Image (cartoon, rainbow, N blue to C red; front, side, top):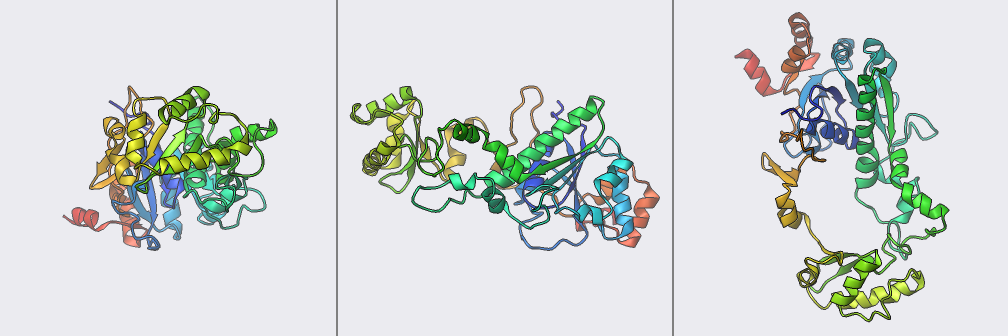
Length: 392
């Protein structure tokens, strides 16, 4: 049974964070994604290209010296047979390598050329260095995350890098590839994390326009301001998530905790929320987390445990759905979403740089003479295992 994206060929310029994440999503669902490693990669992060590099799973690797003209020309030969290309460099890097969208689309007019950046390809910040937190900061979204009496909370790099970046690029690639299959031409996908974070914030912009979301944080319905949408510490130092937003669910909270219905009325009066939250905090602090979890088990009270990483893997819901997989001893999330007719294959571990150099060139139609010349000139690099295999 073929996976959903079986038959697509994607070239991925090796980078960090959101671009590899987008490529991982495509590879998870059957696209043949070849990672283009530089011939000499800086070891800034020691886990890159090892089995612990989960974002690089399910791909093959070709190591090329793109600083040599022959290297860029060799890659253009592959691009002429590709459906898409993904790169996550600062604007201008691909151009300096002789691999601009114009050059690549001239070779392959049907190519979908995905560009992943923080600020986008245009605008006054386009060439400025940044990271997830910077991109999140200028969108208004970071301002809204955190307590009312403290600075904005750092939400790991989920929001800009992966949600607003990698997933946005993956969607953009699939959308543009569908357009090509429908008879359209190739094009550039300009995926900017700032744009993606703005898109993720769409509902809140609507709330603001309608007067339902004040500017301050920690004072609103979904930012921890409401006592019925918040986290609470328990007696054993573990935590609960309480999210009974609708009144019918809130009524279950009141009933199970034997709260006073006249006091805990589920009203939308923020001025009353702090005192009610304090009372709930004092109550939850009297018993361990799992006591409260068992109290709400099987109900629609929307009270659940906040699990640590190890607990999350072992939770019955995760095990029943096979939400995590073991790839060479590395526990990691399984591919998602799930397809009823074209399920994703089991992912393979990240390849070493150059692990499939010869294999890829042969499979993509590069002539034996061209490959031999590239090896002799040092334009392509093989991993040790492949080199030993070729000599044997």
